[in-house]
Image 1 (cartoon, rainbow, N blue to C red):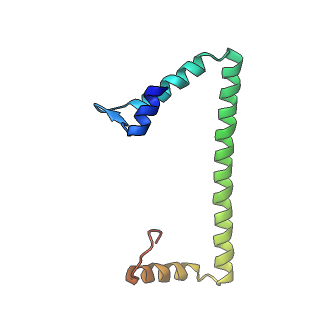
Image 2: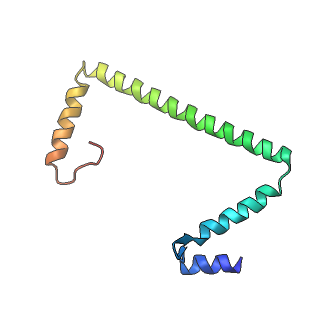
Image 3: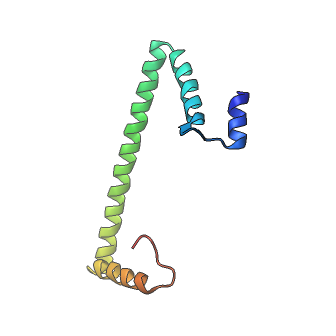
Length: 102
């Protein structure tokens, strides 16, 4: 642990092109993972799958909500949402502080 603390203190992230901090963390993780029983490893994999599914589902919901918001804005502006976006892009080109999003 003292070796790891000293590396972090001096910010020696790479020694001869090898990221020693990442290598040490991977070793610690491997030691911990190897100490688990088969049942615990199985529960960990199930937890990771559930977390990945939740992340995917949340992303799909966010995209659906974004689409609904765009459709609502397009309806409110009587189909002028595309004109608004084009105007915003043109204004962004001539502004002093252009946005990265247009």
